[in-house]
Image (cartoon, rainbow, N blue to C red):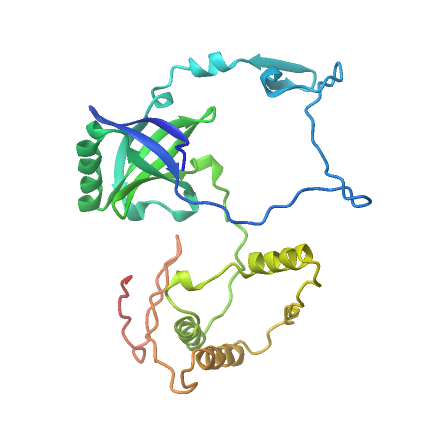
Length: 297
């Protein structure tokens, strides 16, 4: 695995030489575009619209489109000489509690590897400090001609750089949720029972069945066989009339699929509702059970 960037983490006056490696990889099946009539490959060529010449990569520069008829050329040297401290280092700006970051802001993760013996002690020091404080380091860094925000956190024995979207890159969810809907405590309790009954906690048990099906089709066609038949997916159901009945049926089906008895579900205490901004907390009736505070496991 080759590093995608080499530089340093700047932590106050401490400098940690590092190499950056992708933490994830894509296993999707890729396809080529072909001419459907004869199977010929479709090729893409970069052509100058003025002289019609097909260009090689070293003949291609970049420019900013100020208007439809005006392009402003920008050279690689001009970009390299931008006066940014983050152009040479991942610069730590501050430290925040891990729970302060909304996961919706997370982008691609990268592993950081200490570069050489000189990096071993400061790398380990930063890792231990992050672990003991349960905080993440908010950083700024410049890659691929743009400055980015990132978070340094610990995964196993390694420090991970998690790309963080800027505030103006996260779209608002306003208006997407339905309006006021009456949901009974018993319906929420049944939904919690369904959550307990569905699936397991080990994510490694799940497979990319879509990719496996595509690979099976490709393998069959390569060997001159007919592609395997696949079961058609169930048609989407219509409007739910009795939500409670559907929830109860779902719980029974999930338990049967796991080999558990369908009856005698676990009784859940209602979790506290999140208080919406600008609303008053409703007073509880005396008959209701006290709400027990839940903590994440």
